[in-house]
Length: 161
Image (cartoon, rainbow, N blue to C red):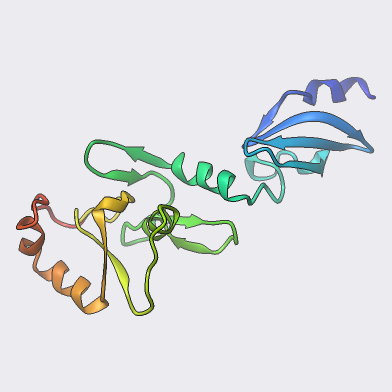
């Protein structure tokens, strides 16, 4: 083993921990979820984590929830957002989706065809499942125009953020 390879043992790269040198400039890594993977040394620092990172449900969930600021009210998405203020997240299949949709699905919810999620709190960055409700597009547009419906349900009157 080369002298400089010893320095990599025990180092963290995102969710990965370097646990051994596999030879030929390859490393064996352990994910926080328990998955083990071997990668080339040059790939260790790609995008701040292991190349092709762990796509297990546990590591994707850890990555998602690490970008959420939970308060007594809304759980605000702190990751990237689109121009309308909705959070964006790349899940296990690497496709981009709305952060509030991912949170809803991760909590065990389903979204029927021709339906969408409405933010009852009117905060587009909120990913708290209890602040979301499945509605038709027509109902979602109606509620956006008439926030008093939500105020009558106990949500504070506030403009969309």
